[in-house]
Structure formats: C-alpha cells, structure tokens
Image (cartoon, rainbow, N blue to C red):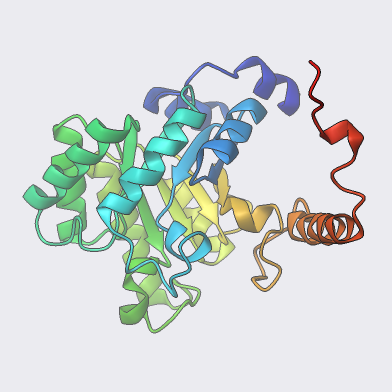
Length: 280
C-alpha cells in the first residue's frame, strides 16, 4: 500500500493543506533531509512527502562540529541544488543560526530571501518561546509557511548543555507543551519534535491539530524525519539510540573504493570495453 501510494504521487507536490489532511486521516508523513541534487532526485523518485534541507549539512556535509557555523548563503546554495533534483517535492529550508533570532523583521527578510532564491515551499525555525512564536506569526502572515521545531534544538546546544533528551522533568515537559500550542496558534503547519520522551511526544501530538514529525521522539508522532546520511548508513560512527540504518552505504562505498584501487593498480581497469579506438 505505502509503496504504491508513493509511486503514484511522484511528481505531485504536497501542500500545507495536504499535511493537515494527512493528520486528519491518520496517514504517516515521511520526511528526510537532503543537501544535493542526486540524493534529492532519489528522494523524489521514491515518493518522499517532505524534504528538509537541514542545517545538519554543517556536520554531515561541511565537516563542522555543530550546526552553528552554517550561514544563510550555505543553506541557499544547497537548497537550490535540492530543488533542481526534486522540483515536485515539498521542500523546507532550515533557517540557520542567527538568521532569525535577532528580530522578527530580520527573520522575515532572511526567510523571504531564502524562499525567493531557492523555490522552497517553507522554512523551519527552532524554538517556541514568545519571541520565536511571534517570529513564526510574522512569517506566516507574510505568506511564508513555517515548520516549527521543539525539544532538542541543535542551534541552542550550548545553552541546553549538550545533545540531551529534553522534557524528562515536569517543568520542561510543561514548557514544551505550551510552546507547541503557541507555535500552532502562530500558524505553523507542523512541528518537528526532536529527542523527547515518546510519551510526551504522544501527548503533544494528540493535543495539536497540526501534524508532529518526530526524530528520536518515539512512534506516536504523525510522521518521522531522519538525516538521510544517517538513515542510509553513511556514517557508522554515529549511532544514537533512535537511529536505524536502512542501508549500509558506507560499507558499499568502502568495498567499491577498494575494488577501484585494486583494479587500477593491477591494470585490469580500464579494459577494452572502457576504451575508445581511432575508428568510430
């Protein structure tokens, strides 16, 4: 059923309304990150619902120790590549650190530039306090759909004291519930819940009329998102509890590289079938 529905909708871009209807119907939202043309093309061909051009590109593509050094120019550059690879898939651009925290006006200017220059349908911003909610409200009023993000918010990793599960105590859990409602009231079309207890994620999901998309938040959310490189097993050194490898591309790449090196050194590649002659 899932594979059939996915193949049928290739080339039919989801809308904000579609995600709301999916929650109403109990249909699971499937999302993954992408940062380049080729992987985006594969995701579109597979029938993914939503592509997140995440600022996680700072770690998995650019080699930074965190997402903090990523710039808006970095995000725009990669989102353009993703849009070229997946022109018919709903895409969300992560607003990077300090592109929306200064003021709602600054956020609107940066988000507007991102949408205009990349063609993504929406932006994502982290946090749900009063300032973040007001920022989301300003963007939505300007016609820019917003995906919220609560729980572990990597741009606040220094303030949070590291990459830790959030919402395990009553005070933090209550705050996350309030912030989820505030983001919904601000007009967000969905909220990512990252690294929070499954029970809390389920409670928030049931309280909201907009979808939740979990990562490390258990099975009760309305959808799931993973970093593509993690899901495909391209980084064996990263293995948090919530992650499942759906392929072993790192292993395949290592084996392929060893074959290439061996065949070039032995002289078996390139062979006659890979060479051109003077005659056509």
